[in-house]
Length: 316
Picture 1 (cartoon, rainbow, N blue to C red):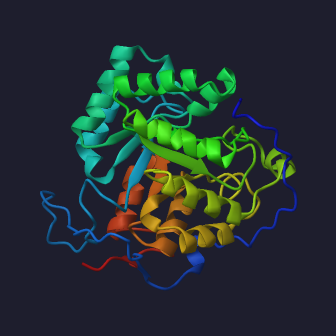
Picture 2 (picture 1 turned 90 degrees about the horizontal axis):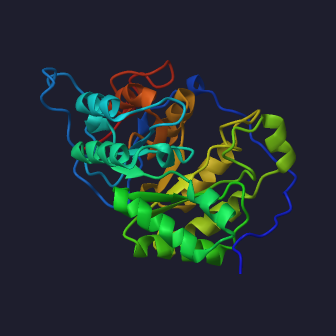
């Protein structure tokens, strides 16, 4: 039986007022993670005498930064090697977007992934499995073939997204288990926006409607119980392509799910600043590769905007 189902778009969208970064004036302490991890300060910089926030070293359980690789920019092996040689301490993972890896010569793809591994970074497929499911009619054989191919070229994490598809929770849990059986870390993506992931306009997304945050939290719990490595939170409908941010959704997720098992898509500086303000320097965030330095400075507490300058601190 096909995994695909027809979903009637939900209506009745409620939004909270957008909270600008500059409106917060308190000091921001990192939220206590579920699993403690020693924190360290940068070494070998020549400026160790200057105060900076101690943060968990790689490999981290929290405070993860995943960056977007090839898609909007043709990020290649040489570029990523140079980038990580300078800033690799502040990058934990690299994600291919839009199935871009499927267009690369296989040896170049393997070399790219090997380069990331050299810098102690994992590599994620992004949510391309959504297209595999849609074009195969939910064929287990075709999905398994895709998973084997991803493992063979060296991928570590497989994101399971379905912004355009309606998949029963039980089928989603099956995909998580199947992914783990193939030696990949399953990372399901969930969000409130129906039709997310296609660069749709605000008007298009509004007409499609949103899901209740309780739906997101319930499924995230189910996916973690099924063996999900981490939950990716889609930003569309929350902070992306909306007229005002759904800060109530962010608060609801952070209050009901373990923060070390949740990663928010936050590929705009004002968005990741908001997450750092409200969750602390050890928030798990997905950003663009061009934003590594800005986020690293914010996490370390050495720079920021008017609302964060000198206010992001950790203890340890």
